[in-house]
Length: 257
Image 1 (cartoon, rainbow, N blue to C red):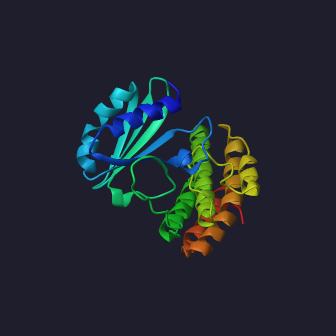
Image 2: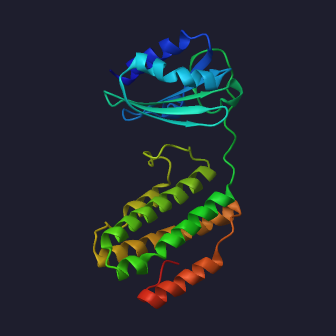
Image 3: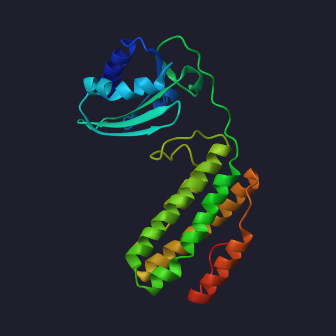
C-alpha cells in the first residue's frame, strides 16, 4: 500500500460515517512540505470525539493491518499514532470542530479552519531546558569518578537533544515552522545546523565523554542565553555559578562561555 492509497482508504471510511463532519490532512502534507519520508497526519472533526475515539481502532483496522498504535487523550481530543504492516506511519487527531487549527488540507467537509496563532514565548519551558542541561552537565564528575563511560556517552547524547530543543524553540519563535522531530533542514538556520553537525562524535571513553560535554556546553550556553533574553525567561545564575565551581573543583575544567 502506498501513502496515497492509505489516505484514500482512510478518507472513504471517514466520509461514510455520519458522525464525522470534516477531515483534513495535517502535518507536512497539510503544509505542502511533505517528502517521500513524511508520515500521514489526519485531523477529524466530530461533535462527540470521545465516543468516536472509542470506535476508532475498528475503523483503522478496516483500512490497514496495524502492528502498533499508541494513544494520548484529554477531555476533548484524542491522538492515535499508528504503524501498519507495510510500515506506513499515520496519526489521527479526533477533536471537536472548534478546536481544529492550523495549516490543513481539506479532504471533505465545509468547516472553515482558523489559522494558527503566532508562537508565543514560553519562559517556563525555556528555563526548564536550561536547568536540565546544567543538571545533566553537573553529573560529569560522577560518571567519570565511577568510570561509567558508557553512561557518560549517554549523557552526552542527552545534552545534544537539549541543544536541539533550545535551537528549535528559538527558530519557531523567529517564525520557522514547528516541524516534527525528524526534520531540521529548513527549520534551523544553516549556521546553527552546521554547528550542531560539527559536534564531536561520542565514544565510551573518558577523553571522548569530556570532549563531548565541553563541546555541548560551548554550543548550548550562548544560544540558550539569547533565547532566555527574547522570551523573558529567568536565567539560573546561581545554578550556573555553582556548576562552574563544581566542575572546576572536581575536574579542573571550564565549560563554555
